[in-house]
Amino acid sequence: MLSFLKSKPALKELLDGSFVDIHSHILPGIDDGAKNIAKSIELVSSLQNFGVSQIVTTPHIKHHVWNNSPEIIQSKLHETQKALQENKIKMPVHAAAEYFIDSWFENHFKEEKLLTLKDNYVLVEMSYLSAPLNIYKTIFEIQVAGYVPVLAHPERYVFYHNKFSEYEKLKNTGCLFQLNLLSAVEYYGSPIAKIADELLAKGMYTFCGTDVHHKKHIEAFDGKIKIKNIDPLKEVIANNQFFKF
Image (cartoon, rainbow, N blue to C red):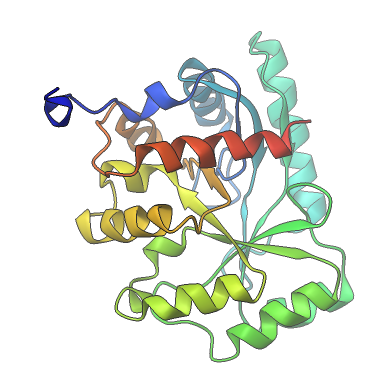
């Protein structure tokens, strides 16, 4: 009775201490995330405090912007792991990458092994301005190369908002969707939250991630959930157990 008047939970309340985060930018000084090792420690400690148990962090790889390599990423990972240990923070951290789909990437994954979330699951993103002209060809070729593409934050690609059938087409190609959890508290705005809600209602997300870059992202996890489809959101959060290591 009067259940519709119940207050919705804060986002962090949905993370029960076992959540495996597969999208974040916590390695120091290599992209637009943590600026130094002190910030890395601060972010990891905060993630642990509200229910993250393991992290697969995903620094950007974008040609001519974030020219990260597996060697650079692994070096920063080891630096971070050492600092966490020295600060007595028991958080298992692995590293993958968030690859920007462009002409460079289209050649790169055919020539060199990608940093994956687990096994052959690879996190990819596209421009916020427009989809690549050959996006479906690229997704097909990623699969031919032996990978499962996981598209980061599809709800944030506003050029698809009025072309919802494109989301369905992407899913039908075998591309998995990763929700940014902060979309559920309208961190990126109400139109993005609305699309996230609709994608959740249709069962189109497989995984989710924090996409934490900085302190403001951490603080936003105190916010109340604004979307309607909380049960599907809980299911997507639980799905991340697939990446437990």
